Length: 295
Length: 272
Image (tube, rainbow over all chains, first blue to last red; front, side, top):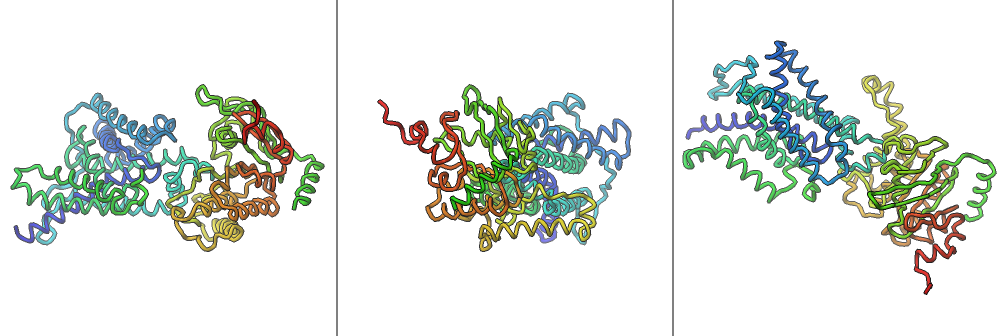
C-alpha cells in the first residue's frame, strides 16, 4: 500500500472520527451534568433527523428554517424527558436511570417506525458529492462539513462549561445533595443538559442522516458514540473529540489492512475491541476523572 | 465563656424576637416506617441548639425535613415566621438556610476554592446584561463574592489548601471546607449534621471554636447535631433529645443530659 493511500485513509478516518465525536458530545453533555450514560442518545439523534425531515419535506419548510426549528423542538423534547421520566428517579440507583434511558431509546425507535415507517429517507442537504481533492487526497464534502460542525460544537461547549451556568452543571454532576444545599436547582440543570444534548442530536442526526439515510438504524450510532465517549473519558468533551479522531483513524486504516484477511467486517470488530480494552485497562478513559472508575 | 453565653440568652429572651426556626409536630414516614413523629423545636436568634439521639433516632430526618429534602408528612416548619413546609431544597437554601452533611457532600471534582465559591451561588445573579457589561455591572458583585469567600477562608484557616482538589484532602479538612461553603452563603440558620464525626479531640476543639466564633461574629443561629455530649453541653444553649423518632427531653443541656430517659437511651438503663 502506498503512502498516499495511507494518508487518504487516515484523513478520512479523522473526518469520520469527528462525526463520531459529534454524536459523543451529546453523551458527554448529559454525563457531565448528571453522571448518567444516556443510552437513548441514538434514539434522540434519529428522532432529530426525523423532525428535520418532517419540517422540511412533509411541511415544505426550507432547510435553513427547518433545522433551527427542529433544534428548538428537540430542546423542548429533551427537557420534557427530564421532567416526565427522570425527575422522579433523581437520587435512585444509576442502573434504574440507565434502564429508563434504554426504554426511551426503544420507545423512540418504535414511535418513529409507527409514524414514518421503516423506509430509508434522504435528507438532501444539497452538499455536492463531486470528488474533492486536497492535494492528492480524496475527501468527502459531507464528512468535511460534519467535522467542522463537530469542532464548532466542541468550542462552544468548552466555553459553556466555563460560564456560571456550566459550572452549575458540573456541580450537579458531582453531587446532587451538595448542589441542592447551596441553592442550585438540580432538576433544572439536568433538564438543560438533556435539552442541549438533544440539540447536539439534531446536528448529528442531519449529518449522519445525509450520509447513510434516515431510518431506525441511525439509533445504532450509539454503539460507536459510546465507544468514543468511554475512550475519551465520558465527562470530557475534549476527550470525546480526541477519542473520535483516534478511533476514526484506527478504524479506517485498520480495517483497510485487515479486511482482505478476514473477508470484510473488521470495522465493528475494531470498535468492539477498543471498547472492551478501554474498560479493562483504563476505565476512566483518556481524559476522564479518575474517580469515574469507582462508579 | 459560659457566663457570656448565658447573658446572650437572657438578652435574646428579653427581646422577644420571633424564633429563626420553628417546627410544629413534624412527622415523616418512609413507607410503613415512622422515622420521626411529633417533633417540636424552636431555635431563637443567635442560639446554638443541640439535637442528639442514638443512631437511627431521626436526627438527620428532622434536618432533611427542614431543608426540604424529605418534606414532612405532617406538621409545619416556619423560618423567620414564614411557612416553608415542603419547599424545594434549593429554594430553602435561597431563604438563608445552609447545611453540612453527616457523610459529606462536596463537589469532589473541584478545588477547595471552587467548592467554597459555589456556596455563594444564591448571591450570584447572572444575566445577559451584567455579563455583557461585566466591568460596570457584574464586577462589583464578583468582588463582593470574592471578599466574603476570602474572609471565610481566612477564618477557617484554609489558606494553605485553597487550590487543592477536595477529593484528596483528609476528612477533618473536608468537614471544614463544607462549613466554609455553608458560611459564605451568609445564612441566618446553619444546620450542622455531625460536624465532628470521626475527629480527634484537637480537631473537635477547633470545630467547636469555629462554631462559637461564627455565632459571635456573624450572629448565625445554629442547629447542631452531634454525638459528642461534651461538645453539646459545652457550646449549646438549649437542646433536644430524640429516641425512636420521638422527643424524650428538651431544655438546657445540663438538665437534659441528666434526664433518666436520655441516660437510658444512650447508655441503657439499669432496669430489670
